[in-house]
Image 1 (cartoon, one colour):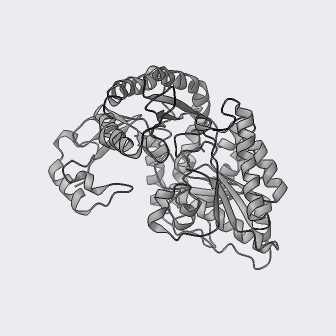
Image 2 (cartoon, rainbow, N blue to C red):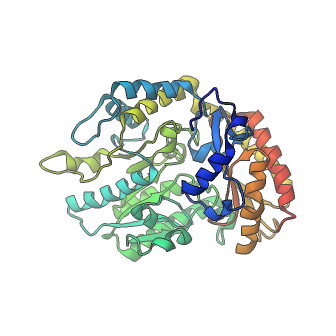
Image 3 (cartoon, one colour):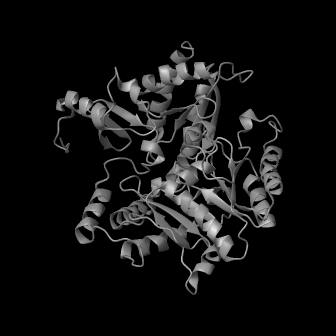
Length: 465
């Protein structure tokens, strides 16, 4: 069965789709038993900031798919760019050959990136970009006479991907446990969740200095001659949107320079407008040695990711018989890079980044009205990227235990928000949160709709645990 623009969404054979999904489709990060006695949500159409299911019901896409759909759904210009390219050159790998789209997009991405981040290595997604960054760090230090530098430091509760290397860097023990032993030599430091800070919780600058200094402590503990890189998101996603305190990244940069450790800015979510800039590093004023990105580079109209490196990291590979022994069949795919170029054309033509900067204050202010609800403990984030932390007692910040969180998030909230017409994310990888990351085209009408649905559902939620 195919679905096109002429299909009456209410006339789809839902029974057949449901049975086929349950018989054959293995969904990602999904408890498949959840659908033993329930329908699988089937999304068939998107337009602007909205999506529709196979029953014809409309939902506000308040997560941009998965932090992806920057320009919203139904952009025919992006679909047409993909079709034109597929008719001209459907596929060509970047293995010793190039094609125009990859060349032009690499130049364009490098022009947006801060400093001398001029070398762009394309992947098909964010996890692959993280793998690429770690492999580059290890090979670079081997080629420059420091073969012992191979370890990685990242933050507690941080998510960096599901491949073996990226999962090793990830700071979520429950996500890693089924696949251990993983790649060794990764270590965790505190994140920047000042809401839960036990030290300097009333002084953001002191807290930021303390949190950054824990990276230096970890490097010292492991030995600077063994640590290759630090992987940090500009705003940490898992746990519910932890922005950096003032001065945090500047201190991290000092520490990395002192110990000759590479700073990798993992911007799979934060790049391409999510924070009102092409890259989050620009917003927070720090210079990475590498940036990993994906998602918003095409607004989800085709899969694409990238690792962007400085000229210094590329230099050893530029001479003799040296080679970066790494690559992906579909990295830098002609269709994906064509879509990315058109996506960035729209960003510039419509002033998307400025739209986010102009409206982020209104988005925050609208969400902060929810603080009068007893279940809302904290609202945090920047740009169009927010987390709402849910608590049992907002005065003591008492959180929910595992059983309560299960009943609250999976037993009630996730379904209730969806039934109310809001597609977002409830997350218990740290303390329970609702995550919001709407398309960058959204404005006050969408903020109000998000707030109204959240207010109704969260009011009910406080009685369910």
